[in-house]
Amino acid sequence: MDWSRAKTYLIVTFFLLDLVLGFQYWKVRTEQASYVQSFTEQLTEVRELLASQKWELRTEVPKATPELGFLKVRYLSLPKEDWSRRISVPKLYYAGPGQVSVELAEKNLSASPDEDKPGEKVMTQLAFHIWPREIYQFDRIRKENKGSGVIQYLQVYKNYPIFSASLEVEVQSEKVTRYHQTALEVVGEGEAKKQVISALHALRSLFESMDKSEKRTDNRVIQEIRIGYNSKPFNADEWYLIPMWRILTDKEVYYVNALTGEVEMAR
Image (cartoon, rainbow, N blue to C red; front, side, top):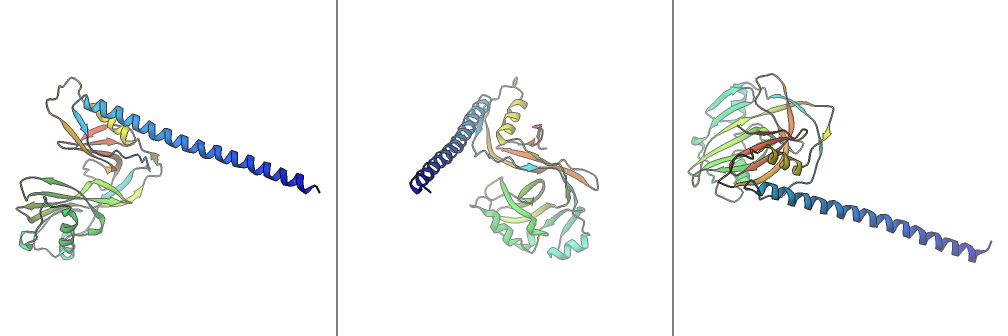
């Protein structure tokens, strides 16, 4: 065997392999850069469209488009007496399965919507007065007067919020007075999952749904865009939640169907 020729052959082979791998790496990097540029261009265009109707986008726009489907749910079924025993409060108003209001003024719990990140502090204080506590995560604060407002939490399922299942804690003059709770039980997931529309698509849908003949005299500020599940209230034993983009503004809350792009405003 001619080892010199074999050695030359191997060197040439590895050199060609390096060229191929290098080209593939360059191609992947170029495609990634192209995608980022495309997203940036789309974002700029959406900002301009919204600005034409006196809307300002003042939040980060998510890039992820996960595959989601319907969730089959029902109200969490627990008799009023059992619920009262679990949370140890004197006044519980039972509106029906999974829907309760609780008076907390006698507990003398302090909180302020004006504090930095009060959600965790309030939930810690309410640890023994909420059931089930572990299904909720902090969502947002709706401020009213100084030291007063509503601290809102949302039920989550597999890290996605359920916008129609909230826990709203009322604070007056830096004292926790009561909360209103809606708790759902997920019965199952729909078999057919689809990739949701992008957040940019949802913003375009919102723009296209605006009444262009209406001349706005005030600005709207979009503060948050978030994917989750939502549905209108149903008087039924079981119903379905739909994947939704929630677009939170300083004046209204909009929901965009993450599968069809249909827009609706929260009541």
